Length: 126
Image (tube, rainbow, N blue to C red; front, side, top):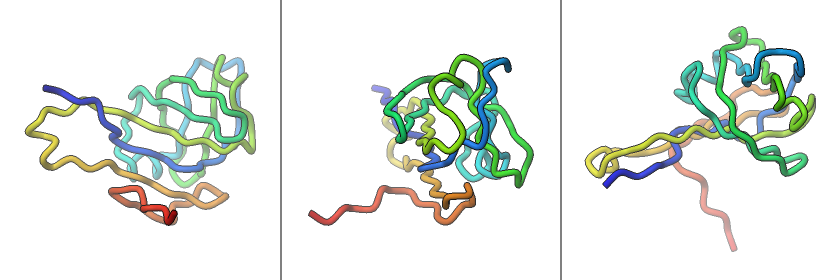
């Protein structure tokens, strides 16, 4: 059996720009890609916390250290500067791979600077 599982998540990144007339994609600071393990041209799902939009695109590299999150092409209608996003990548794992499985969760501050990395979502108190 194979399972589709969360590979990586960039939690609550802020859109720094949107480019409607650019080839569709999402440009992500190289530091954030490296920290999360998301590869350039990998499919990503984007969940817009600010307006509820959800869409799929692919990642491209933005300049390292720029803290850029740029939503491009048609997706620019779904997210604009200042919006808060969750960017998720999923992968397919075999049962054997599941024995060592853990997602990479990257948390940022309001300026897209990495503040924490975890392998599990913290348990919320009831």
